[in-house]
Length: 419
Ligand code: 7TS
Image 1 (cartoon, rainbow, N blue to C red):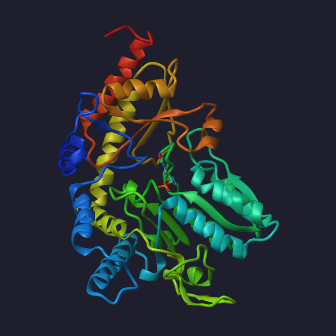
Image 2 (cartoon, rainbow, N blue to C red; image 1 turned 90 degrees about the vertical axis):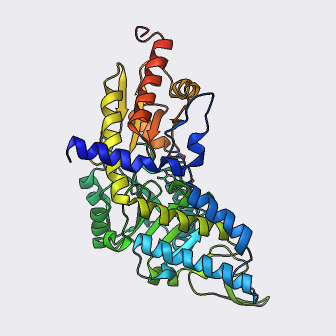
């Protein structure tokens, strides 16, 4: 891409910033520079209005009312399922289960599929760069079943060691659990290869897509994964709603996890029978407005275009990486060949939390700490990083504001000459 085309792309994608009301509120008297999108993205007016319109015009409980509003709310909820199916290119609506988010989706697989299928000595294979929510549910499961956790190592750039992965795969490996994109390093993992090799060894694959869906097109059939989890709130959608995609035949064979209303066929005190998927896994009144908001978020990113968003974020990542690495005493954590818009770094002489606090005084919101990925920090021998994570509304001016604020912090700490 030529420099001219790139500039036009950055401008045209970040023009959508005007859709996000919160971006025009000042913070600490400064223009808000929001670079904490890995934690959660801001919401466009289209999503806020869809959720508010649902409560104003369509609110009722679903799947249980004979009245018009209940049927209308059910239609909206099920339309949301269709829109997620299209978004992920799943082959059936029944493969889409609504959950509270990535964390709940992974716990569902661990507790339903895992408890029904794992026995003592079986192996669960994770990677060294997983978020705690793709570690702890598997540890709980291993404690319950006697299965064993194994970990695929990574190199100093934050790339998985594929040879070690192949060696770790064996007849006892039952499931491989991998982040599509690492939240702390930005690494984009070679999921297609991981799936092919796992299937060759007879293991399933769960992909944690929390940091992927807002930044690239995801096609679960092309990936050929067995489960895919994500949260709407990192995709410009509401909090408290997310998705588990699962291959239909796997879901059909899985026992319920949570019991309650809406997941049964019949209930008697001696025995209950369960609904078919997806209802079997959606006990209780779900987050109906959340589904409506998530569908609006999907429409939104599709209208901007995920390919354009990805190219825009790559452009800004390149800019931010160049400018931050040019500062004295900076070490970038996560330098993989394939990266998404996440820039983690540490600075000699400044604790990441202090850096985060000084940046905040300048209106620059980043995240500082271990990013719920403590094993990564242990491998790199650090307690945490400062992390700037990008979204479609970020601009080169945001990158400049980040760099200026870091320079200010360095000068406050006496690490450079005062500009
Ligand atoms: N997996 C990954 C890769 C994540 O980045 C996160 C959240 C989760 C799972 C959990 O998602 P949840 O929506 O269920 O909470 N990551 C972050 C982060 O990087 N900063 O704050 C939350």
